[in-house]
Structures are given as structure tokens and as C-alpha cells.
Image 1 (cartoon, rainbow, N blue to C red):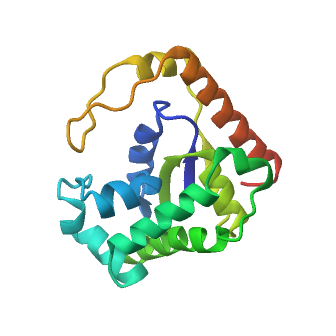
Image 2 (cartoon, rainbow, N blue to C red):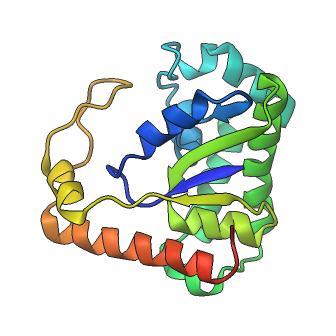
Length: 197
């Protein structure tokens, strides 16, 4: 399992696409957003189909959970709010951690089975999710993607349409971007210092 970590607008999408060209590598996009954007909202998959009609994701859901459901997605989103928080990084450990990580493990394993791959790529980026996965026994191979903070800040200030529906992505000012850039990159460094791959 390969986890792309860092701050958004740092090149993780490009890296995921490049890795996805390798034999046996299954790129999954940002799995952290699968629950809200895919299962609940039914947004478009990268294949162009709405998530509920995508053959790949439909089969992944069947293998992992016996099918996708709104209840499952809402449960994982609820767990995320309780467990997967940047402020919890210094001491990841929560009574609901195992259940939260099990949902991701099920997605990764089912995706490997459906695609017949050897490795999945999750480009979720969030350091807190990487910590949760490591603490929950998934042991991801983390690729720390760092882009010059000035370029990241410039990108976050631009109006960028979301490929799924054309709505505008969130925009941040330079100060907010610099705080997030520092926090995410320091957290990924901390993960490495704790022995993650």
C-alpha cells in the first residue's frame, strides 16, 4: 500500500497517475474522500461514470462490504471526525481507531482483488490518515511529496474547477496555506521519524 502524503496542490495527482502506469499498481485517488464524494454524493469517478455506476467501484464495494451504503459511509465519516484529526497525531490512539482503519483496509484489499494488482496507491495526502493507518497496522509505504511553498500558495489562491463537476475548489490565502503546508510536512516527517516506511 503506497500512501502519497503532503499538502494538496503539490503534485500528488501527477505522481499517482505516473505510478498507475506501472504494471500491478492500482491508483485509487483520494480514498479519504470516497465516503462523502463517492458513496454519499455519487460524484463522477475518474472513468467518467457516476460512482454508483462505476463497474470497478461497484465490485470493490461488493467484495469489501457486500455493497456500498449511505449508512456505511456516514459511519466512516463519523469515525473520521472522532479519530482522524491532525491534533491527535502526537498520540494516535482512539477506541474507534481499529474500526476506522478496517474500513480502509477493506477498500484496499478489495481493490487489489478486483484489479488483480500488487499495490494500491492512495493519494489522500492527509498526514493524520497516514498516522491512523500506521497505528492500525496497515503499515503504508509513505511517499512524501513536497512542493515549493510559494508555488503551493499561488496554486491555492487560483480559481480551479473540480474535474468531477466543474464547481470551484476551495481557495486559501497565503497565510492559511503556509500554516497547512508546514503542519502537513512536519507531520509526515514525524511519521518517518517514528519508523514508518
